[in-house]
Image (cartoon, rainbow, N blue to C red; front, top):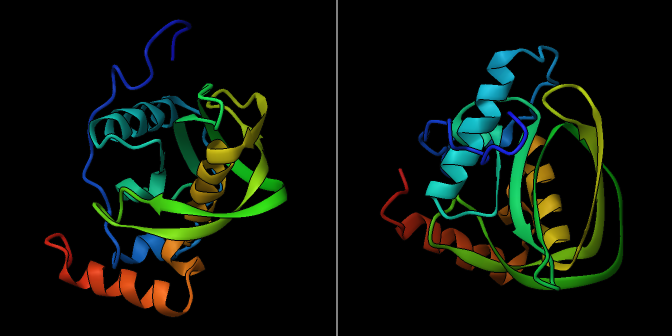
Length: 179
């Protein structure tokens, strides 16, 4: 991406992988090739995320099982955070555990109260291989934990138990997009 360009402006919108697709439940591979294909993937992730009106998107959500995610997400003070992380590692979660509404572009139209820490730190690299550390609080911390889960082969439904999990699965089974 050129400095000053709008993320996703040169990207192509790709189909989303939906709940039930095995790619969402497998751990993603480390990125080893930092060439133009990776830059194109990040552009496509932004374009797809913006078209779907999301705040984050991981590569496996568009059918690519690599450890990459993008975000354009506010924190609780309405500060906007925009970026991407390649080969992310969730190195810290702390603070208060908050249950809040959480949705996912791979479960369109659904959400459930999901517990997340209100502070998270993710380390990784950029598309050029430069080290990056991202600190998130509040809603942005939720977003970072959610996207990290995706590269680990988890969706937010995997954090739910009891009636919350049963209700979400019933809603998913009735959804028009469910296979």
